[in-house]
Amino acid sequence: MQIQNLLPTTQQVYNLPDAHGHFGPYGGVFVAETLMAALEQLRTGYERYRTDPEFVAEFAAELKHFVGRPSPIYHAKRWSEKLGGAQIYLKREDLNHTGAHKVNNTVGQALLARRFGKPRVIAETGAGQHGVATATVAARYGMECVVYMGSEDIQRQSSNVYRMKLLGAKVVPVESGSKTLKDALNEAMRDWVTNVDSTFYIIGTVAGPHPYPMMVRDFNSIVGKECRTQMPEMIGRQPDAILACVGGGSNAMGIFYPYIEDTAVRLIGVEAGGLGVASGKHAAPLSAGTPGVLHGNRTYLMQDANGQIMETHSISAGLDYPGVGPEHSYLKDSGRAEYVAVTDDAALQAFHDLCHYEGIIPALESSHALAHAVKIAPAMSKDKALLVNLSGRGDKDMNTVARLSGIEL
Ligand SMILES: *Cc1c(COP(=O)(O)O)cnc(C)c1O
Image (cartoon, rainbow, N blue to C red; front, side, top):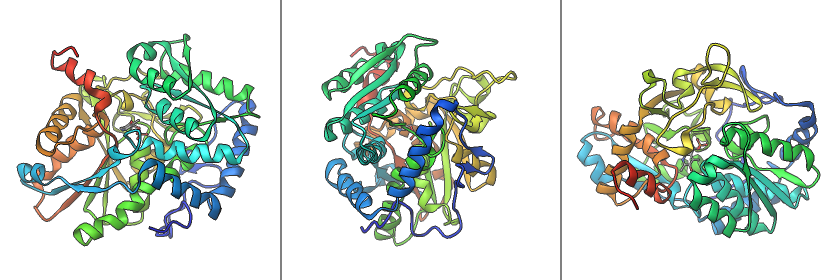
């Protein structure tokens, strides 16, 4: 497949964000003055490289030889037959190096860091998956790597902490606040402000201040671009609907973006419904939140009447975030994409089903998208096609799933 630049060539009309990073009323730049210079450098630098043939060619070569792209599409035939309706196809991001879509983005940002002459990268991580993807590319390109992680999360995610260390990263425990992701994020911001001359801050999803939501989307849009060629090769046409789980929203934006103008294809984002949206114990800001400002951008959030961020709950650490990328907020309000929430229990059932019927152990995050396919496929005719983004593999979730079944590993 030929890739001239990072933007889908099919796009004629949809051209967001605007020059200030706005997706309608969402997105933008809400940060302290001390960060403005660093963001401006990133914005102009990225603007230059996103259409630079040499940069784009190197990115494509890295995705091919290091990540292992293109990832295949797989027809989940037995499972589709069992459900008795639409055919389910899986975009196999679980087969990428490091086991998920996140590396598409960290490769892109690491290549930018090199172009900018920055020998040091930093990241924040909650569950550890973005930390591992960042440590991986830092090793690959010989860069110093510091990952900020709440001390609470370090305890809960010890094998990912060990992975990062094996890859040569320094993992800094954050002891402030709730000792989790949002505290790690504040600490990473502080580091960036202090060391901006030497340091590139690699954000792991389509959130944060402009240009991050756009840039992370562009790097992950390779997923949807491949699907646009692969689906016609497989079934002679594009799918009827595309489903993807939404935490911050990067795997979903990656597969949705090249389809935004193709309005015959339904786009369905699946949030973490936890114990049920009505229970309040969930991580579903698009399904049950309101707009506000968090982490540098305006978007749907889980907040109380006083604008305090609410505690989130999900079986899946990667979806456990109270905000969402601003482009999803725009796609929701404009009606181009639909957003639903599925419960922990439904995701867990879909996890076991995919293991059982297809011999594929999915990530718990991806299992949310699978669970919504289970809900809608049976009512559709057998000649319809659902394409689910299988964002990652489930090896990392063995302990969680075992514990829920009363087994200690
Ligand atoms: C991190 C992660 C997610 C959630 O992040 P998005 O930015 O919403 O894609 C989903 N799936 C997997 C496998 C992940 O590791």
